[in-house]
Length: 171
Image 1 (tube, one colour):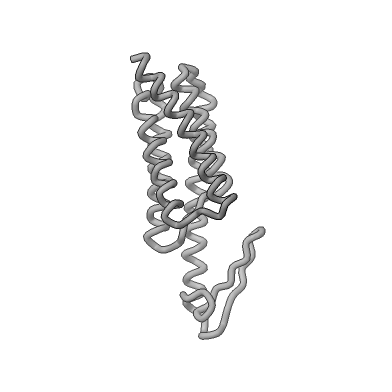
Image 2 (cartoon, rainbow, N blue to C red):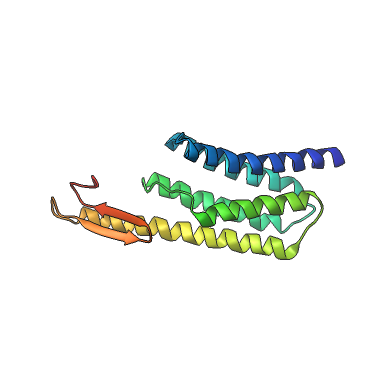
């Protein structure tokens, strides 16, 4: 009904705003925690998938959106199980903003096929990026496990500096 769609639209807008705001506040005031990071990720997925389901009848292409969000969740969950500490990337944050914008437009009745496809492309790119990051962490763990005691390897990628070694990284 019209009332339900309005409630979903308002909820979507509030979710997008609070999702961006809570992360900003947590970083600004150094009030972030591992538990909060995990909970935020779970809430993002549950909400994105949950808010997409009601408008599937209006825009069936959103099934691709839902499936890609599930793929991203599985990649990150698998990475967590291996203690690879998955974290959001700027691409992932951009994907979340684009997805929120797309869902809000869908609830407004402004279904835009190019925007839906762009969102799906960015979701797929994000999934591949997270998968590559996870595989790279697996590779670095294997390298660190093969080091002699006291031996270390320094890896740099962009602004990221990591030191791996049996006595340094605890692997």
